[in-house]
Each structure stands twice: as C-alpha cells, then as structure tokens.
Length: 218
Image (cartoon, rainbow, N blue to C red):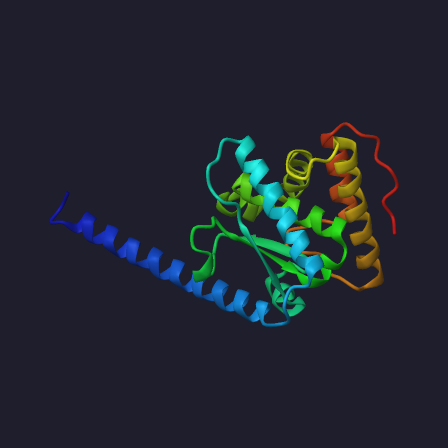
C-alpha cells in the first residue's frame, strides 16, 4: 500500500458511486412522483399491481429469497418513449418512498388497460430482475439475447407466481408478442430498445421450449 493511495482511490470510487446512486434515486423519485400525479390509480389498476405483488412474492419465496420484489410505478408514454421502452422497463433505481425495494418496474398506464397484457409485461420485467440483466455486461452488447431470455424465464414465473399452466403461460407470451407485432405494423408503437422484431423473439422463445412455431404475423 503506497503512501495511502489505495484508500484514497477507494474513497474517490465510493464517492462517485454514492453520487451516481443519489442521482439515479432522484430521477426515479421525480419520475415516479410525476407519474403518480397524472391521475390516481383506478381500482382495476390497483388490482393488477396487487396481483403482481402477490405473484412476485410467491416467486421470491419459491427461490428462498426473503425480501420484497421490485415495486411497480405507472408512468407516461413520453417518459417511456424517451427511455426507449414504450411498454415498461426495470431499473435498480428506487424513489425515496420505495427504499427497501430492489428496484422499480416502470410501466405504461395504457398497458394496464389490458390485464393479461400487463401480466405478460410485468412477468417479463420481473424476469429481467431475477436474471440480473441490469448488471450483466452481455445485455449491453447482445441485448436481444437478454430480451429473449427474459421472455423464456417469464414462463416459469407466470406458472409459479400467477399460478398459470405452462401451456397457458406460453400462449400468453405468444399472444402478447403477436399483438405487439400488429401494433408495430400499424405504426402505433415502436420497437423497444434492445428488442428484435416481436415475431423473431417468439421464434426464439418457441425454440427454447421445442415448440412448433405458429404464424406470428399481424
């Protein structure tokens, strides 16, 4: 240890990390705060979020994890489009009021208007968290691989957490990706950052489960 230079470097690194964490927390807090002020959650939206909380808790309990799951925050189309994720995304940042949670799933309010679609999206984002994708450098260089992995991993999460049959869960993932294909073809949505075409993602998911690939055109 030369002249105490290592501790100084460590202090500098820790200061940078703490500053970055503080900025991310502030941005998440502001985003969540603005989102919550758009309008109060409806009873149907609260029910979907409560269903997610219960499902995610079952998933964590099955894995032997003794902490709370990522929290869900509803946000606007604009915030999500700027982030490159028109439907939803997972972030390790949390608002001040959500300290104790391992991250936040930001979801488009429009997605919550279709309960089964919301279930597919929330399971997909929970899969990103469970797989540690935000900390995996390969997810930056080969994002499509991690998106497909999240689709694949979402199926057992739907089975364990949402208590669906595997065939039912696979059908849900397929229907969601097929619906996204239709929206993309009509120009009502854009491809999320890191994603290939929804049909290509479904073909990759089907291959992972050794399924015959059904037609996936709008």
